[in-house]
Image 1 (spheres, one colour):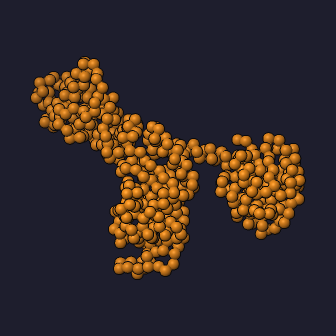
Image 2 (cartoon, helix red, strand yellow):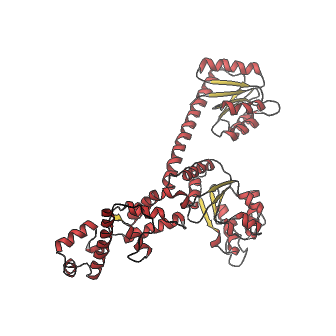
Length: 462
């Protein structure tokens, strides 16, 4: 990490004297002087300072205003304000505005060195915290969003960038593509992570109740309102509210939601006063909002209020290479949840999974894997297990166009498939009685037991 300081003072000789003093005590520090706030704002992009030392009293733009602009660009910047007109009121105002330290002219060498040492130490800590947070963000996204295809890498990069701001977000994508996970990841990686995350499934709540659910109501506002209710916008204060399937809300709610996004205030039903709404809004939809706008079913001004930052979740068909990773992950989770021994997919079963269209996207794949975990008794998931879960005819072939294999291998697969289905029916018909099963099948008891062990099937599985 390079240590850089920007010194801003309209007295050029004073600023130059500070630079000479700092170079004597901090030879590794790169210092640059600007004689106006306007000049400093332009220099910040090139220098990217870790510490800003600025005079408080300057023409055109004072030090407090410069500090606000600078912190808006880089919240981790360490700011020191200095003035010849030091006072308790000025110091308190500066510290409340975001300054780290306050110095009074004329500056003593020892005071300057102590101050700069603390500032540089803070900057190092802030830099390290940012680095660790970035690593944690990547780790968190790898854990919650499975996949390493180019579109998934772009999605994770977008989430990391969006989480660093506090702007409204619109998440768009087909059903089952993980819009809820994206919203929760943005919350977890943002400065609001310690605040609540509250989700509203907009279409699931009747229109006459949705307004009260979102904005709250006062006692007696309507029949049944026996007591006041805060509403989700108030309950989620300091956190994030997710408006799921925003495209399905009525025009009446759209109008009131627009007012909330514009004014950042909510008015409970039946109340004559408004209350501040300190929440970040994330909306999601699988609907083509532009078409709904043209049809007069969605407000254009609300769309632009929601569409400040946009994230598109890719459908599973565009990331088919992620299917093996997803399938293995879901199968492992299912086995843990059901307290079953670990299972795995055969290469042929993986090919079948990858070749399917999955119109329900990741959610459909996850539910399918859950059924596989239930109905596959052994540790290896084969193509015929997929057909069984599909409810296909026992002689149906895999819908995937499996690559051609040598005749001997193909024959072994067919024989293995037949053997498993035969043994499962055999045990079902004899209720797991091995002796009876051996008699009916004409196999020696020992031979039947070897087949069962090889297939990972036991009488208790029936």
